[in-house]
Picture 1 (spheres, rainbow, N blue to C red):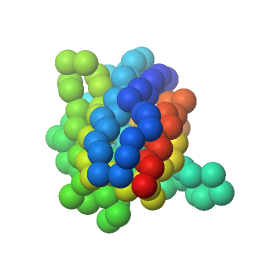
Picture 2 (cartoon, rainbow, N blue to C red):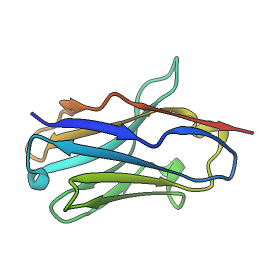
Picture 3 (cartoon, rainbow, N blue to C red):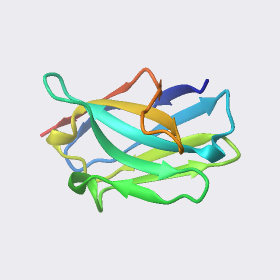
Length: 119
């Protein structure tokens, strides 16, 4: 089992920055991929960014490339999502997730943190 706890959401204005944190416990993450997802009411949950813990390789969805950065702190077992140049369309509940590298599903989820960007 992997337990995930997010923090760092809030209400900001367009153009501002926020940094989300996801603290993981329960397992060594070297064999996992970590992901940040978001979901707005009435929409499907979408992946925003992911990171392979073992080598730090990353993926970003097109809408956040150049604005968001996913990173990790090995010592703290924590993954971050730095969000810059925020737009109103980034408003959503952001979730941290983890999946084993050998699996295709994302079985572990945090509770979510609300990000609201006003125009």
